[in-house]
Every structure is written in structure tokens, then in C-alpha cells.
Length: 136
Image 1 (spheres, rainbow, N blue to C red):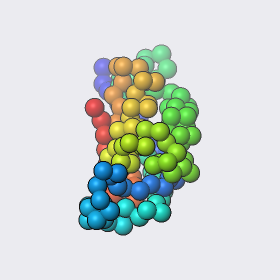
Image 2 (spheres, rainbow, N blue to C red; image 1 turned 120 degrees about the vertical axis):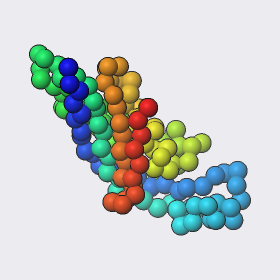
Image 3 (cartoon, one colour; image 1 turned 135 degrees about the vertical axis):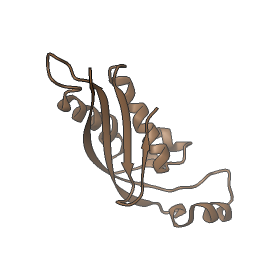
Image 4 (cartoon, one colour; image 1 turned 90 degrees about the vertical axis):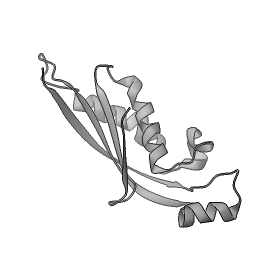
């Protein structure tokens, strides 16, 4: 049976600061530049969640898009939207909230809720020109 990929776009706004607590201010500034602003900075993140699998012959779906929409809302938007990632999202208290790390966290939040026969890919746009993709 052929595999098909379905995609769902989502959006959230969040603030963060890129830095390492174990580095000096000078080293943080040298590596992270303006993203190391101690007063934080924000992004309008765009998210694409892609699920690949065989089409269910009974429903015609790979996954019900309403189910996927609701899953993204509870596991991503409700947890990250209008939050300071460093200070308000537990996983980032000791994990630098780079786009790379955010995408892995989102994947880890979604994966347990999907059938194991489905492949999952997360693409996160930090800006229209800067984005990352994660799949395991």
C-alpha cells in the first residue's frame, strides 16, 4: 500500500534567550549574539507537523486532521504560546531553547500520541528564512 504524508500548520508566539548558565557573559555574547539578550526576545513561530503512513481503507485517512489539530493544540500551542520558554516551560529550564531543541521537544510531545505505524516529522520556522526539521 502506498504511503501518504499529511501536513498540519500551526502557529505560536514565544520569547526566549539563548545562553548557557555555565558560560561567562562574554562567551554567551560571542556565541549567541543578540539572541543572548538578557531581557529575552520573541518569535512568531510557524510549525508544520507531518504524519506519514498508509491510508486507512475504511476512513480514507492517514490520520484524522481534527485529531492532529487537537493534538497540536494541547501538546504544543497550549504549552508554548505566549510563554517565556526559558522561564515558563519546564523542559527548557536546563535546555537551551534553540529552534533545533524546540523542534525535538515538540516531536517528543507528539510522538507518544500517534500510532507507532505512523512516521512523524516536525518543521519549525523561527523566521520566514530560518527553519529546522526533525524526524527520528
